[in-house]
Length: 248
Image (cartoon, rainbow, N blue to C red):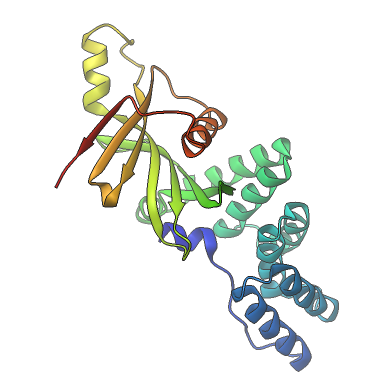
């Protein structure tokens, strides 16, 4: 489910304008073929006919984002947000586009808004939406989806997960920044941290979780930027694990 939330785009819907419907379908076909700039051009043609066409705005943002034009993606998604202010998925897309565009002020504002949306959900839906896709990036030819978890819950709580994809878009392996109750309790008993502090650790899970490597330990929660920097160093082969275990 998490990967779908990161990569989803809207399918063609029936429009009152037959020409707009045809252009939207052509844009979606180009999008699925990975021809994002050409797809964006089709979506913009739709928007000339129907300025508030929701599918063209959303898919146009996706095409622009994947084509390396996050500013254009943000422009289209902002227009759509004006029509759908409480759209959870759309708010996540805005966080991604601002991150990619380097607009930290807007990114942080959009991030606060998605946390606010999450806090207003009913308990069941809040539990189902445990994370959102904060960022997508490519490193050494590998596509990475960065997930941020809203709450540190459970005995093996996770704050961030960086999912590294295969060429066909499936999960290959992942990194996670976690804070486990058992590790934290041991550190408290040893006097390494205070009673209200937590231990965090950056781990990687390969081969369906059968291989585990630990790369860093933290005595307080590190910022996202620090974790991303460490993950990219690992992907670049510049940082080695401090421990490694395998299970059959």
